[in-house]
Length: 340
Image 1: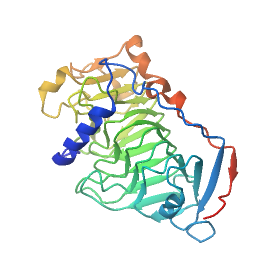
Image 2: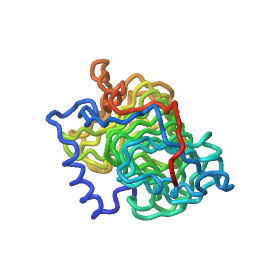
Image 3: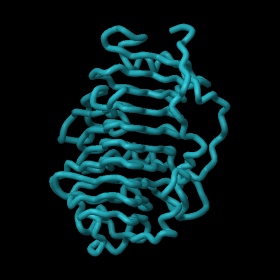
C-alpha cells in the first residue's frame, strides 16, 4: 500500500486543503494567488552556525532553529558545517524566513529512521512559511517495510536548492502550499513524491527504486477548483525497474512532465489509475516535449494528455507558483545575533 493508508489523517488533511486553495476555474497555472507582502530586508541575514565539533553557535540543528525568535521579521541563515546529524527536525509554524544550508549535499547529512504515520515520521518537517533548504542530504533510513517520510513540507513558499531526499516509500510529502525545488535529487520506490502542494520541480533528478510497478508521484488534488499540482520541468527520470509517472491519490490529481528525460524505467502506459476508472475523467496528467526511451507516448493511457504548446505554456515558468513574488536570492550580507 502507498501513502493512502491513514484514513483519519487523510480526511482531516483533505478538508484543510479544500479551504486553502479555492479558485474558480478548473485548469489554471498553479499558485496564481497573490500573497500578502512582508517588508523584510532579504539581502541581509542573521547568521547562526551549527558545528558538531563545538566550533559554532550550536552542535544540533534543532537547537539553532529553536533559537530563532517566534514570528521573526528577519531572515535567519543557519549554516550547517559538514557532518552526519542524527536528528529529527521540525521548523515550527512560528519560525518563518529561515534558510537551512549545508555546503555540499554529500557532506552535510541529516538522517533519522522512523516509519509509520506519514505526518509524523519525517526526518525534516517544515511547517513555517518562507523556508529555504540548500545543499543538504535528508534521509529516512527506515527501509523497505513501510511508509517512511524523509521530508514533509507543509509551510507556504518553501524552496529547496541542490538537496537530496532519500527514502523508499513516501520519501517527499509535498503537503501544502507553494513550493519550488531546483536541482534536487529525489529517490524512492512507492509514491515517493506525494501530497497536495502547488509545486515546480526544475532540473531535478527523480530516481525510482521500484522493482515492479511503483509510482513516482501520488498527487492529491481533490476538487476541480483547487490550485494545486506538480510540474516537472527539465528533469531527469531514472530507476532500476519499472515505474509509473503517477497515480491519483486525489480524484483531480494533476501532474505535468515537460522537457524531461525519461529512461526506459517508465512503463509504456505511463500512468496508473489506482484501480479506479472513475478518475479517468477527472485527473489531469500531461506530457510535453519529453525525450528518452521512456518518453514514447504511443502506448500511453488514453486518459492522459499530450500537451500542445498553448496547453503547456502556463506550467513552464515560475509564474505558475507565483514565484516572482516570494522566491528570494541568497543574502549578500550577514550579521551575528546580538545574543544567543
